[in-house]
Length: 147
Image (tube, rainbow, N blue to C red; front, top):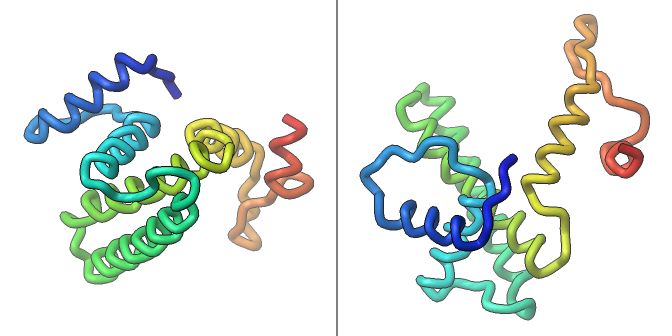
Protein backbone atom coordinates (compact mmCIF):
# COMPACT_ATOMS: atom_id res chain seq x y z
CA UNK A 1 0.00 0.00 0.00
CA UNK A 2 1.34 3.39 -0.84
CA UNK A 3 1.97 6.00 1.78
CA UNK A 4 1.25 9.66 1.03
CA UNK A 5 2.88 12.70 2.55
CA UNK A 6 0.61 15.08 4.45
CA UNK A 7 0.34 17.77 1.75
CA UNK A 8 -0.39 15.22 -0.94
CA UNK A 9 -2.99 13.59 1.30
CA UNK A 10 -4.67 16.95 1.99
CA UNK A 11 -4.78 17.64 -1.74
CA UNK A 12 -6.32 14.23 -2.37
CA UNK A 13 -8.96 14.87 0.32
CA UNK A 14 -9.81 18.17 -1.37
CA UNK A 15 -10.13 16.35 -4.70
CA UNK A 16 -12.39 13.73 -3.11
CA UNK A 17 -14.54 16.46 -1.58
CA UNK A 18 -14.63 18.75 -4.62
CA UNK A 19 -14.67 16.32 -7.55
CA UNK A 20 -17.81 14.43 -6.54
CA UNK A 21 -18.80 13.76 -10.15
CA UNK A 22 -15.43 12.36 -11.19
CA UNK A 23 -14.74 8.66 -11.03
CA UNK A 24 -12.25 7.88 -8.28
CA UNK A 25 -9.78 5.14 -9.13
CA UNK A 26 -7.34 3.35 -6.87
CA UNK A 27 -8.29 5.10 -3.66
CA UNK A 28 -6.19 3.95 -0.72
CA UNK A 29 -7.31 2.90 2.74
CA UNK A 30 -5.45 5.90 4.12
CA UNK A 31 -7.28 8.28 1.77
CA UNK A 32 -10.65 6.85 2.84
CA UNK A 33 -9.68 7.24 6.50
CA UNK A 34 -8.44 10.80 6.09
CA UNK A 35 -11.53 11.79 4.09
CA UNK A 36 -13.83 10.29 6.74
CA UNK A 37 -11.90 11.98 9.56
CA UNK A 38 -12.06 15.32 7.73
CA UNK A 39 -15.77 14.81 6.96
CA UNK A 40 -16.56 14.03 10.61
CA UNK A 41 -14.60 17.08 11.75
CA UNK A 42 -16.36 19.38 9.26
CA UNK A 43 -19.75 18.04 10.36
CA UNK A 44 -18.93 18.28 14.09
CA UNK A 45 -19.07 14.51 14.66
CA UNK A 46 -17.02 12.76 17.33
CA UNK A 47 -14.35 11.87 18.14
CA UNK A 48 -12.90 15.24 18.95
CA UNK A 49 -10.45 13.86 21.51
CA UNK A 50 -9.68 10.64 23.38
CA UNK A 51 -12.50 11.21 25.89
CA UNK A 52 -15.15 10.51 23.24
CA UNK A 53 -13.13 8.15 21.01
CA UNK A 54 -14.54 4.94 22.48
CA UNK A 55 -18.13 6.17 22.14
CA UNK A 56 -17.41 7.23 18.53
CA UNK A 57 -16.04 3.74 17.88
CA UNK A 58 -19.19 2.15 19.35
CA UNK A 59 -21.41 4.33 17.17
CA UNK A 60 -19.20 3.54 14.16
CA UNK A 61 -19.56 -0.17 14.91
CA UNK A 62 -23.35 0.12 15.14
CA UNK A 63 -23.41 1.95 11.81
CA UNK A 64 -21.07 -0.69 10.33
CA UNK A 65 -23.44 -3.42 11.52
CA UNK A 66 -26.37 -1.57 9.94
CA UNK A 67 -24.50 -1.25 6.64
CA UNK A 68 -23.55 -4.95 6.66
CA UNK A 69 -27.25 -5.72 7.12
CA UNK A 70 -28.12 -3.50 4.16
CA UNK A 71 -25.47 -5.27 2.08
CA UNK A 72 -26.90 -8.66 3.06
CA UNK A 73 -30.36 -7.46 2.08
CA UNK A 74 -29.35 -6.37 -1.43
CA UNK A 75 -27.43 -9.62 -1.95
CA UNK A 76 -30.35 -11.77 -0.82
CA UNK A 77 -32.77 -9.76 -2.98
CA UNK A 78 -30.37 -10.07 -5.94
CA UNK A 79 -30.21 -6.28 -6.29
CA UNK A 80 -26.73 -6.51 -7.77
CA UNK A 81 -26.63 -2.89 -8.96
CA UNK A 82 -26.80 -1.75 -5.31
CA UNK A 83 -23.92 -3.94 -4.07
CA UNK A 84 -21.07 -1.46 -4.84
CA UNK A 85 -22.79 1.33 -2.86
CA UNK A 86 -23.43 -0.92 0.14
CA UNK A 87 -19.89 -2.34 0.08
CA UNK A 88 -18.62 1.25 -0.02
CA UNK A 89 -20.61 2.12 3.11
CA UNK A 90 -19.20 -0.96 4.87
CA UNK A 91 -15.65 0.00 3.90
CA UNK A 92 -16.04 3.61 5.02
CA UNK A 93 -17.30 2.65 8.49
CA UNK A 94 -14.67 -0.09 8.86
CA UNK A 95 -11.99 2.46 7.94
CA UNK A 96 -13.44 4.94 10.45
CA UNK A 97 -13.19 2.39 13.28
CA UNK A 98 -9.63 1.48 12.26
CA UNK A 99 -8.60 5.14 12.18
CA UNK A 100 -10.06 5.84 15.63
CA UNK A 101 -8.19 2.80 17.01
CA UNK A 102 -4.99 4.05 15.37
CA UNK A 103 -5.31 7.71 16.40
CA UNK A 104 -6.61 7.35 19.94
CA UNK A 105 -5.55 3.88 21.08
CA UNK A 106 -2.13 3.51 19.37
CA UNK A 107 -3.13 0.53 17.25
CA UNK A 108 -1.53 -0.68 14.03
CA UNK A 109 -2.54 1.36 10.97
CA UNK A 110 -5.29 -0.45 9.08
CA UNK A 111 -3.28 -0.66 5.85
CA UNK A 112 -0.48 -2.47 7.73
CA UNK A 113 -2.96 -4.83 9.35
CA UNK A 114 -4.53 -5.62 5.98
CA UNK A 115 -1.08 -6.35 4.54
CA UNK A 116 -0.40 -8.76 7.44
CA UNK A 117 -3.80 -10.45 6.93
CA UNK A 118 -3.07 -10.88 3.21
CA UNK A 119 0.33 -12.40 3.98
CA UNK A 120 -1.31 -14.72 6.54
CA UNK A 121 -4.03 -15.74 4.06
CA UNK A 122 -1.39 -16.64 1.48
CA UNK A 123 -0.01 -19.27 3.89
CA UNK A 124 -3.40 -20.99 4.10
CA UNK A 125 -4.32 -24.03 2.00
CA UNK A 126 -7.76 -25.08 0.83
CA UNK A 127 -8.86 -28.48 2.14
CA UNK A 128 -11.32 -29.83 -0.44
CA UNK A 129 -12.66 -32.55 1.86
CA UNK A 130 -13.67 -30.12 4.63
CA UNK A 131 -14.25 -27.22 2.20
CA UNK A 132 -12.28 -24.97 4.51
CA UNK A 133 -8.97 -23.11 4.59
CA UNK A 134 -6.26 -24.42 6.87
CA UNK A 135 -4.61 -22.04 9.31
CA UNK A 136 -0.89 -21.61 9.88
CA UNK A 137 0.26 -22.84 13.29
CA UNK A 138 -0.96 -20.59 16.09
CA UNK A 139 -3.49 -17.82 15.81
CA UNK A 140 -3.09 -14.73 13.62
CA UNK A 141 -1.72 -12.53 16.41
CA UNK A 142 1.04 -15.01 17.25
CA UNK A 143 1.77 -15.61 13.56
CA UNK A 144 2.00 -11.86 12.89
CA UNK A 145 4.39 -11.32 15.80
CA UNK A 146 6.73 -14.03 14.45
CA UNK A 147 6.77 -12.65 10.89
